[in-house]
Amino acid sequence: MPNICIHNAIYAPGLERLRELPGVNLTILPPKEPDSWLLPEDVAGQVEILFSSTAPSNLDAAKRLRLLHIDSAGYSQLFEYKLHERDIRACNATGVYDIPIAEWNVAMMINLLRDLRGMIRHQEAGIWDRDARFQRQLRGSTVGFWGYGGLARETARLCKAMGLNVHVFSRSPIRPRDDHYVVPGTGDPRGVLPDAVFGPDRKAEFLGNLDFLIIAMPLTDQTRGLIGEDDLKLLPRRAYLLNPARGPIIQEQALLRALNERWIAGAALDTHYHYPMPPDHPLWKFSNVIMTPHISGSTAMPEFPHRIWDIFVANVERWIAGRPLLNELTPGQLAGQ
Image 1 (tube, rainbow, N blue to C red):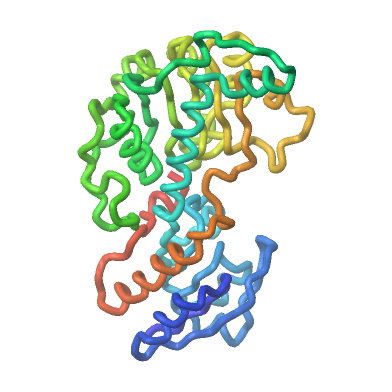
Image 2 (cartoon, rainbow, N blue to C red; image 1 turned 45 degrees about the horizontal axis):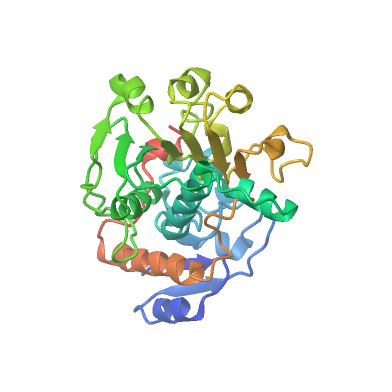
């Protein structure tokens, strides 16, 4: 039976489920905000499963650690620890944030298409303006996802229900995701919703026919700066760009130029190049850009504790039974590939 260390906020129903598992040995440490933290010496030598936001600074002392379970969908904080070389498996929080991020995506598409920012400016100035740009409909538009993980699949489900065409750009064929956490009734677990899937050899065709491009891939060494000027120039001038994934996937200067020179119609950005974004950054100033402070899906949402503990307890059960884990990161992912 595993020795488990919890370095995370406690969710009482989840902890009760965990304690009901036979033979589980628990150590609970108070969570700390700083990224760098240490496992107590007596715990480090015994822990086999660790539930935390990242690895401890004294990971070398955790000789028996075999599974690290983090509470974020992003996992770039793990790259430096080279877990794949230490025989330590890792699971993330994919699926926890899919619903609120998908709802953010749909909200941003509607707000951008109908120029909600413009209507609010008019309201504040007392201007009565019934221009046609405020009356456009979303139905019939084409939304493209660069990547087709959990947040893309839940957004695709909502988009299909609203009558949009769903296109996907992916390096590999769209497959079922049997070992990923999904809130029942959401997403596209079987991978059957896209109207069209484009491989790397059809990128220009994919980008050239979109009304909306949603970035839906993790930040890795391979995806950092992946989208640059050449890609943004392929988008139609009517297209809007949404980035709820990670800011640096899009080259910063390329995005600024695309907005300045009107290569695209506008953007909605929830992930950024600086935290916080400095008040003098030019992205704040565009009238066709909506900026939100990385809140499309976060640990502050009420459903977060239940969902993250649901994944963790399920994975402890799977670990004990020798079954495949939910949301397990591959060696390549842990290496930043």
